[in-house]
Length: 203
Image 1 (spheres, rainbow, N blue to C red):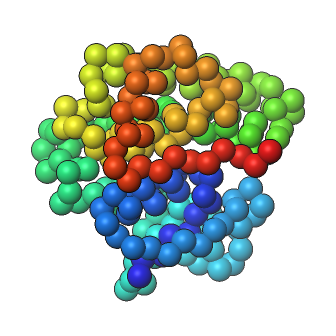
Image 2: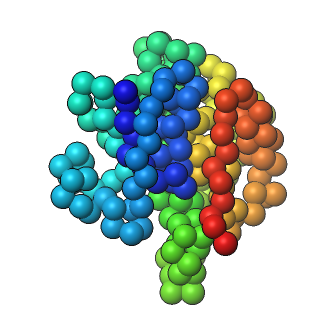
């Protein structure tokens, strides 16, 4: 049985659970609260010395880390990932964009505001997150204003990767009404069979 170590509210961990669900793979879930130090235990560090979630342990004991790599691994041979070539490269472009230009700002703003409850203490950091996160959403909007999906290959793991934190971006004080193309894309992806929406923070 595949085992996923992750935090249910995390978009990066959502990606892993979603690709497993979408490809019909059963898995066990081990909840790890990174905000509470769950990734700093000796047991966790033995799996991933980088102290990050998600972590996947395959049925043979092999460990996979990094959400983008995990998406690619489980999407191989399915409609979620095109065959090797330019179409796959277009998907990878968006995966790298998500981790470098999108997630560090949109996910961080959400975590600080909705989970750490530390908005006032992080004013300068959040200002940077809002500026750079909005710039990333602008890039997505330019594509999605005129196309249904992020690449020409239909819904792929590029869409799953960007959906993860975009569909909950308002928890980080991003007003998604600024980006109607993104809003329409969120609705399209959410309507696909088997897509599960991240539950908001406990009030």
